[in-house]
Image (cartoon, rainbow, N blue to C red; front, top):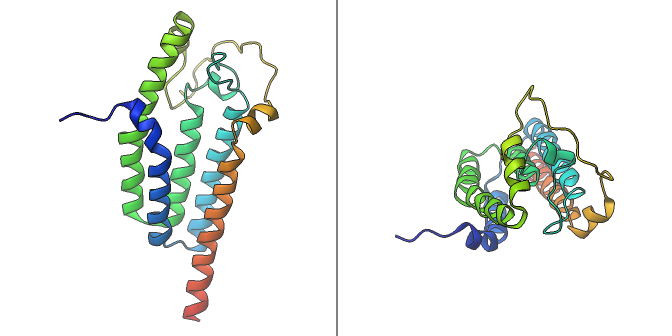
Length: 189
């Protein structure tokens, strides 16, 4: 049996995400407390993605500043936070299992494929970065390498990477979940 490569999965992760969003919209059973807790956690993931997108210059320079100082994949860590928050808000075990399957079956192979490309593109600099920086989860109480010279967060990079789409998606899902609660309560009363 031939497995799908990480590079092939790169093309499929967005359509798979949209399919998962449709299933999510149908299955979600939020309550006001689950929505509040879930949106808070998802907002932390959204913030991580925004910060990361303002530091990365894809294919031009190795990103090692901002959140890239603590994790090699802050965009994916932010996506994980978004998924965790929305799974919590939905209160559905099937969605939790599907999100885990997506992480293990799609995102981890994509991360490996991207890191293979970065190793080839940036050579010894990337290999050194890998030795110093964890792949996904920052290590607590770990001494971080000295901050590389950086001009800081760039709104131009944030906009160029169209990261505002994640913010729009967050807002639309939040409205959908709130509407599900409101209309379910309204119909029962």
